Length: 248
Image 1 (tube, rainbow, N blue to C red):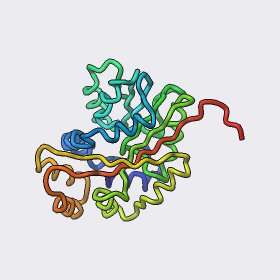
Image 2: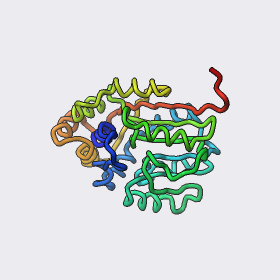
Image 3: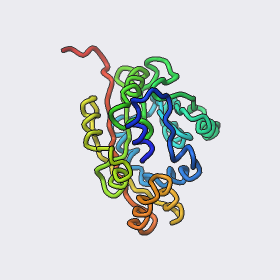
């Protein structure tokens, strides 16, 4: 998604928060997008196979307006969503107001407002982690993980048709091969997932593509997408924190 990739490319600049051009400005359209994404649960199934969070403490970094918090809370012991944008924090808190084991707090990924070793799973979905420049966020995630815990990054696959080429067309500086190499060098596994996006109305599909891409790329994507659904490729990267002393 174009704004998030720009955030990664600019992450070396001394700023705390880099605005998201979609959910910050069009949260209602993004809500439609969230409901349409992964309607068959392929990402959730893959994530659970990599690290089952049932009965565990979970942190959702860059949780936005908290869409995924209730899903995680169904099985987790506790869930904390961390989000830097105050209007989204308020929306997230409202979403989980009746979910007793979930909450949302304000803070950037590079300075999580959490104590050391308090989470079993740190989950980040198309929120911050897009390769070089995200090292401060990775270090923070590692800090709040308990030994044996896992950091799971769900990111868009820039190599997968059709969404990946649309993404790369909007961000020619974004090289998906380099991003994958970065995560491999950081010790993450890689699992590719195909997820179905399905909308109830054609106008919703078009509205979502228009907030995700430039006008020209959105027009091409809309023209290439008949009907109400299309598949999107994701990368699931997972890195576990050692549970004990690692000998050389």
